[in-house]
Length: 112
View 1 (cartoon, rainbow, N blue to C red):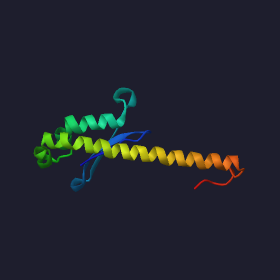
View 2 (spheres, rainbow, N blue to C red):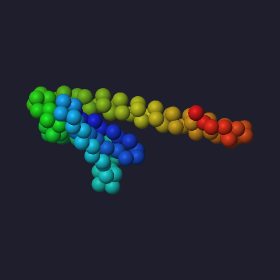
View 3 (cartoon, rainbow, N blue to C red):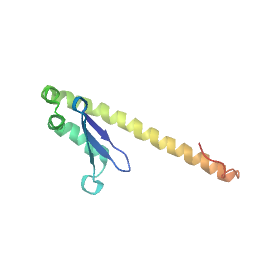
View 4 (cartoon, one colour):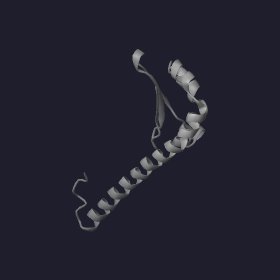
């Protein structure tokens, strides 16, 4: 139905409806919207039903209980932070390996 891709480069989101083959992708403008994760959390908290209606998920939109959304947001934030933290750790590990290769004269070998 909804998919949020909070990438550092080219963040975007999708309005999807598999039964009719709809996948409308919209880019986020960092200048106008700021951080994509903060924007996404705001939309989940404040615009979820109306966004679901745009996906033609009318029955799902009608079933959204704002109390459930509010209860879920801290879990979404915690999950997103683990993903962000893992990505930073992975990049940090790659950087250390490359630095070690440079220091030992093995920098011409491809990094996998």
